[in-house]
Length: 119
Image (cartoon, rainbow, N blue to C red; front, side):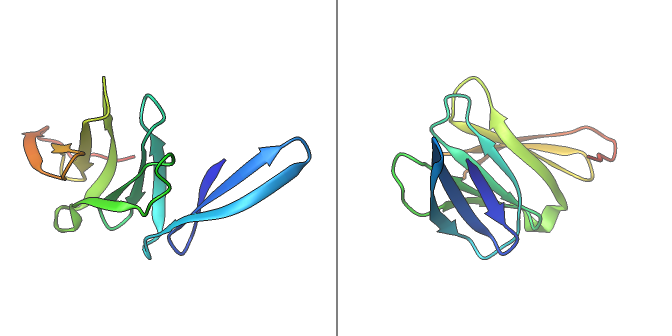
């Protein structure tokens, strides 16, 4: 079970039978608004309210890697673009849909919906 604390800490609870173990996986020092697993469960996106997206790979047990920072564009949400784990799609409040490479955070494309978006 993965969850985030308000301070921007990613925590893992390993539960087996009546025993559990707590592990702090990453500290990004920004409040995490959502956690999204990739379709094959090898990557976890950590999305902040400020528009920063981090990648965490549970198998590698490393630090969360900052992929993109859309803080200047009224960021609203992000998710994996399937099939695969290579791309991320984000949307701004103004209705701009953006596609990013998860490998290095490169901006690839955008589409303006022409409407304001709400969650």
